[in-house]
Amino acid sequence: MAMKFTKSLCWGLGAAVCIGLFLAGVNRPVSAEALAQTQKQANGQITERYGDTLVVAQKATHQLFSHKKHVIGVGLECDACHPDIFQKKRGAAKAAGDYNMKSLEKGKYCGACHNGDEAFGVTDKKDCITCHGSNMQPPEKIVWKKPNKAVFDHQAHVQDIGLECGDCHDKIFTMKIGAAEAKGDFTMASFKKGRYCGACHNGDDAFDAQSQCDSCHFAPTKKIIFTKPVKTVVFDHKIHVGKAGLLCETCHKEVFVMGSGVLSGLETFRSDDPAAKRKHLEELHEKLCGTCHNSDQAFGFQTRCTVCHIGVKGLKQMKAQAEKGDAAEQGEH
Amino acid sequence: MNQYAMIIDLDRCVGCHACAVACRAEWQIPVKEGFRRNWVRRLGPAQTSKGLSYTFYPGLCNHCDHPACVDACPADPVQVTFKDARTGKTVDMEVAATWKDPFNGTVQIDKNRCLGCGACADACPYGARYVNPDLADDDSEGKADKCTFCMPRVAKGLQPACVQTCIADARIFGLRDDPKSEVAKYIKKGAKRLESQKVKIGPNVYYFGSKKDLELLDKLETPQEMPEANSRRVMLAKMLRPTLSKMAGLGVAGIAATTLLGPEDKE
Image (cartoon, rainbow over all chains, first blue to last red; front, side, top):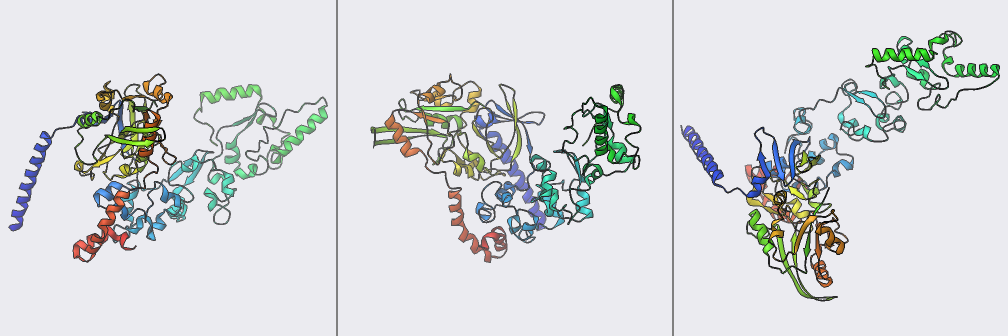
């Protein structure tokens, strides 16, 4: 009974306070600046004016930490965290290199309070979302576009291999889409030095990054038309990788070393002596396509010339066909 | 960006304080110690190397090129699209509750998102900001406030309140980078910024006057050091700490206090 009375008293008081606040709000003189600064439009879009500069859109950025929640919500003083736990400088913790879940679990950084005792713990799975947002699902696959197209199977690494987020983030990869691509050294050469994927893919902990190219990279789907040293030689990756079942390394390790410019450096051979010319062409074929196309592993380069040498007319036909049909089949490499 | 700037001609200033009063009236700044956007200090009479000087220091926010206050703001950042009403240009920026305007270079505060922590006020070497705790709402402990270069007035084609009211035309407002502006002409004539070796953040209020007056102004008012972060709040917090630590033995309140003070107790 007493409870009920108290409850209704609370309601009454609450209503009185509300009315009071409402009236106060109506009567309160509004400063000219406040009026000028904030106007809510009928469509709900916030437009704030700072003179001629308008704020036409404002959206929250994804932040792991909110000062507002901790200072206003919880009521912490600045020196509860600064400077003992966090330096008072934006990005200082990240720059320290150990600002990750492992450190937090050991009671460093956020973990100083977020230990499951003073504040929710950092190991409790249901609390991940509190800091990391609702989209805590790691991307299933990442497709890198720079400097070359490659795919990374996130799920395979986390679920099948059982890696923890902290194993790669943020020491090896910053946990931000496009962060690695934005750096100039996200290359195979860096992997060789143990950076990025190369941290594990060293042939010891995981397959060597210098092998098994097609685990991450794709063969081009578009036919390559060579213009050097002679015009209109066509090469189709699809047949070689698909039907023939070749690996990238089969050709790209020694014969067509990627990025070596093995073909772009060749000039058309000119000679008045037919024998010399023939010899040169034979040697060239043997060195390149002839490695396999020797009538043994694949048709010999002395046979079926027109399979590759399609001629100017053939090229024209091919181009016309491409424009008509499979425009979508663009090169990916 | 075309930076707004102000010239203060000390040869003209008579120290009447009309500028400070006009500012207070225009923006309804409460009359309270330390609450001001605009001020005038009397300097001297004092001996300088160029003779006896007796001058004034009319001051306001410098809307610096590299404002220390903007970087100090700990409010949760948001992605904001700014639009210049005159040109229609838009700029996307990630900002906390205070920022440097991308179009006119003024430094502004979003009062809705300000936490009232005072970090910006502490970071300003010129003391141009103050926190008004009376404006505290559910989201804050108060609101920081400072000169806006009267942007709402300027947008209407008016001069800033302090400039319009000045009886001696000692304040000149305009675009710094427009060579035809009065401001640019004064800068060319030798108007000085209050900058020192360690405080070089590009203040955009320039002072012009006789050599002796500028010497006295520089000697007394140019900050020589960037402020140590939050000296005021560190002091406040230290004063509070012993009281709160004692609360640890007081049952429920003690538990609450230890929770809040967890990291402190480990010291």
